[in-house]
Length: 345
Figure 1 (cartoon, rainbow, N blue to C red):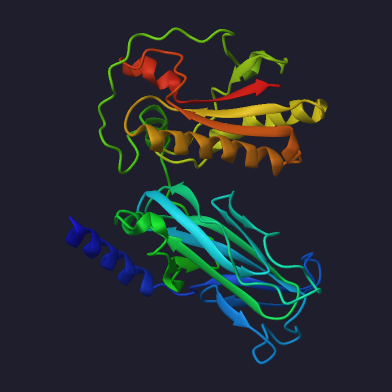
Figure 2 (spheres, rainbow, N blue to C red):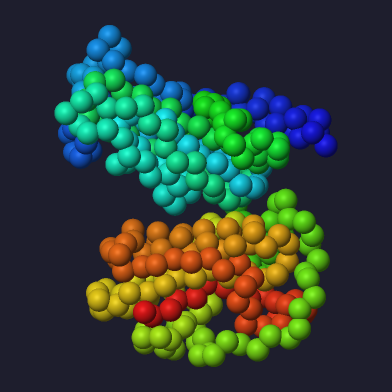
């Protein structure tokens, strides 16, 4: 199996090496507010070590600057990915619209001493395979030396017994980075409907056969579709029209009208806090289901915050298959357990 996986990676690598415009768009700013742009260029990788002899770009010194890299990242196979940084002074990473690494305030004391070499947290993210996803990286340096390196561990790396220790993290190669948006594949209405109604197990799940559970009655406080009910404290609402690409947390366009109505409701009630919870059925590995449900909830939250809803107005949780509202032994009922809910706090 390892030989087959290696061969697949070689094929993917050969294809990507032939692609033009590799790397990310780097925007270089004076200061750390991203409001005084000095220059723009394409950086093949994020792997930099700057000092007084090696300045980041013409027009910037080695002190008090920031960089924002944007573009797309190719995901060679579906599964869990670990992202990490080595940053002096601070960095953030967004992958597929979700804040994945936040090491912004973890290093040094600007302008009082030389800041220390800091390794940022390694956060895991489930990503769908064989497609391009958005990536954004922000970096700041306050004083003296400046280091910024972006790493990942792919599912193939993590399969090793030592993978979870970070020993196999690698600098993301240029062939997996693009400064330009890639055109997504055209999906017919029939195939999209199929992807909504039938969601196979996540890559790497132990089994596609659901475990045997007794019939489950809905929890107290019956959930109601958002189209007919306004937010009421203590009441749970099912976002029935919110759908995701199969086995991923990428929102499908048919979700947007419902989420836009939710945005309007929250703007009318700026003091109303909500909890967004993701849920799955019981098919496959329970741990992966919890992770997927958590990132689906975060993706909904990200949609709301991009449209003006304050972050502190929203909580997110992923429950996986822990809170079924229907019988998991029948597919037509099991589908009801794959949902996103809103609880008015």
